[in-house]
Amino acid sequence: MTSASTQTDVVGVASTRRWRFPRHVAVFLGPALLIYTVFMVYPLLDSLRLSLFSDEGAFVGLSNFKELLPGGSLSSSFWNALGNNFIFFGFHFLVQNPVGLLLAVLLTQHLLKRGKGTYRTLIFSPTVLSVVIVGFIWQLILSPLWGVVSTPLLGLTSTALPTLSLMSVWQFVGIPMMFFYAVLVGIPEDLIEAARVDGASGWKIFWKIIFPLLLPMLGIISIITYIANLNAFDLIYSVQGALAGPEFSTDIMGTLFYRSFFGFQLQSGSTAMGATVATAMFIVILLGVLMYLFGWAKRVETYEL
Amino acid sequence: MTTATASRGSDRTRRGLSKATIHGILFLYTLVALVPIGLIVMNSFKTRRAIFDSPFTFPNSETFSLKGYETVWERANFVRYFFNSFTVTLVAVALVVLLGAAAAYALAEYRFTGNTFLTLFLAVGVMIPIRLGTVSILKLMVSLGLVNTLVALILVYTAMGIPLAVFILAQFFRQVPQDLKDAARIDGAGEYRVFFLALPLVRPGLAAVAVFTMLPVWNDLWFPLILAPGESTKTVTLGVQVFLGQFVSDWQAVLAALTLAAIPILLLYIIFSRQMLSGITQGAIK
Image (cartoon, rainbow over all chains, first blue to last red; front, side, top):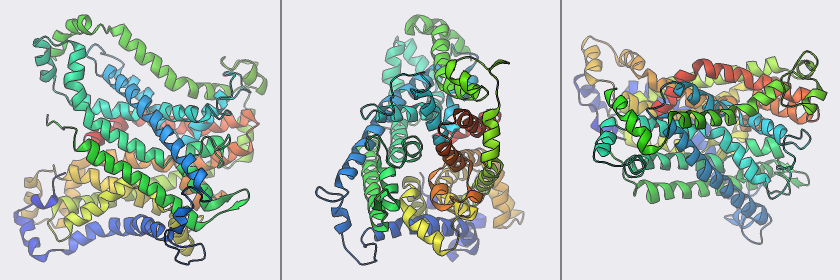
């Protein structure tokens, strides 16, 4: 991203420079900044603040967070949900990316003359559906009552989470497919042709030329998926309910957040614990983003084409 | 295109991937994507018995039934839900596109105090999910008296969409030729005029933003569930979720409700898929 300040130095704008913050700039920026600040930035900061207070409004420091650590009342739920959430992400990372990449590579083959657009459109279609609909579609199909599948995959503690993860992968595989596709069609034909003339095999061309060019996009897709997964809720809530059954085996951060804020069964809801879980989610997401920025984006080379 | 035709022969021999293999794999995966949806739609038109006895056959004169749709029509207010979803999505997308474009234009076009700070301030919102602020958003909406109104949803979705919109559109606005804007200024156009002249030039960016904003808004369950769960403000996504929860054992009704919720979106998507997918591609490489 080029900084805006290097941009303009022109006739019409030159006079505005002396004003430093001209009125039309305020008119352009004002409405967007106002809505964004009031309904997004303020609530996020206020949630962080609330995690330091009790439900009665007394300042309690970090003691809400003690509930999440070993010995605390929410400790076992928290670590279970966090672990499950990483498994949920793991399935996306390890299944969604390779499948999406394979489809994108196939779609950009020169041999494929017709049908490219149709395949793309149809394979992407589950992505536009709401997660709720996708959840119920699979819940019906996998229901032993219907008998298409005889094992109750969603009812066993060992299979419920992998099944839900794969349902989500099934829905969203179109996204990495389209993003990888965008990079692949941007690779100049000459580059591939030159390697081919030099005698490189198709396999070698893929790993030595194409794959390095895809790495920055792989990083972007993975961090987007990571954030979306840590924030997921709709699928689990629709299919397994707020209790994320069986026996909390599909509980993730989103469902835990919902239960700690609104309460469930015997446990009453708590603003403080809701804000505390949200803050913990924020920290986990932030750690992921930092790892991406410094561990991946810094090391992976981006090539100008 | 000459290079493409020249390489065709070598493609086949070197990679061992024939045209038939490529079509075969893509076709199989297309089935994986479509069969589950097709199964639901097909069975929604069948009698209860036929749903369980022969799930994989098309409905025929004997097994055809619309009873599920009758139940949905009688027991759920789908017209209302669709109206609510349309209103929220249209207004939120329009606001995100317009306000996002104006803000992006200001950041890309002018030098002013705080430009870098405001760019970063908005960029943070791309990375942080707004759901984490739910506790305070609910408190805020309660104090503004907006709980159970569509306005609450529109405001939250607009706030949620603005950061990415500004981020994407600023990249597009930087590519609008400076000469063009200066020519307009020399002709006496004011800054607002110049903005509306530049706007049509970033149309691909506006399309990308509309796509990226529309889908999460239409499909969201979280905020309707928390901010507007009342019967009169339910969106389709929440309405379906609640209906399906209540009628879980009435398979005909459940299949019909799922079909009703999925088909309009799929049709809209098929009609606009070219624009949508190119929007995603444009947004992805920016």
